[in-house]
Image 1: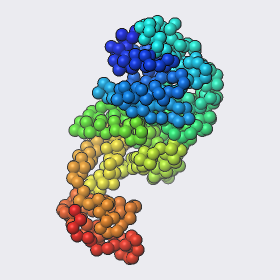
Image 2: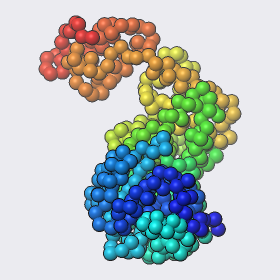
Image 3: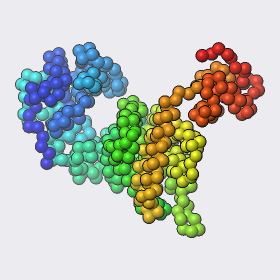
Image 4: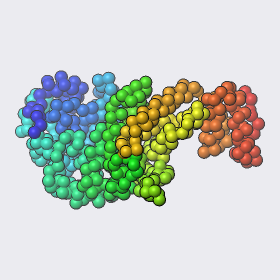
Length: 508
């Protein structure tokens, strides 16, 4: 049983969440039929204050959203045109608060709640009543037709009605997220329906599935979510590319099959993300700040790194082989994994930036390990830094987690220490390279040499950059001359729009 609030006192609310207390009074004084609902209410009952708040409004929600934006100096925009949901983002408490205003579905707030996914999300509070009375006693003063307060107190996740997953199959993924986020247990019928309707997830638009997945991957503990997704049969429809990794045997460096190793890699990555200083103390701040950056919409880089970890060995089933000596091999599995991840990004309709990130990490997650096996020269080290580019810190985190999850009889403590030491050197070189501005950029090659954007331009820039870091070129003029030589060597001295032309002096 969970201890929930037995009343919502307006004065207590104003102390615990001053912004929402003020907002509640503002909305109640200007609107009738505005209801606080969803995750904020659920979490507040559990003693937690969320930065995201959901309201349902009788009639068109646009006026209410506009008034709130004007009053609290925020911005209002139409989030979901079909549903007429408006989002307001306002500065508050040194950060920002996200407020969603949706119209009531059906003829009443009770009808709207009946269309929700799970009972714990189907509760509502009438703001006008809260402000007028000053205190609401729970659960009797809640709008709670489906007994969400009771289920939340009992630790149960229950669908609102028997056709909940049929009405919106994306709830199949959401159910696992809420179960772990809230520490609930599936009600028996709900669990049976999860298994029965698992195949319906294939009918959901990719971008909606992506939102649920990324919200799951934003938090630690996602390995338990995906373990349950596999156990209930949803994995074969959600990520069919990963089903062949379940039970797939590995070589003696590993102690687990591919799927179990993948889940352990997620756990090790969680530990690294929680405390990167435990392994890379000199770079802890840099790594932490980097993981908090938004890579797509409001989803942090860490969520996509976890998705890359989930798919880092997706290429192993198609590259499995066993030598005459009985040893197992997965030659080029990272290249096959890149292709798998490319299809995943297309299916989930991720942004081009997010796709490039995932494909780059999965396709290069072995690069560091290959280099550690060799006697590494300074030039080879620098080339690896340039090859990994801006992905290097993320590749270090992923490959380190991968190594920590590899505990077979051939794995040694000395080997792990050597690996971590090499990664520390890589991070040092990466930061040194970042602090040295390039002598020329792509726009210089386009303007000075008449080159076009594309892989060739990128390759020439990489070679010039390498020469700069090695001290072979020290000025913009020298860098341009080297680029010109490389351009001619690659057979581009002919005529045409992409042909070379003499260097133009005087361009700063």
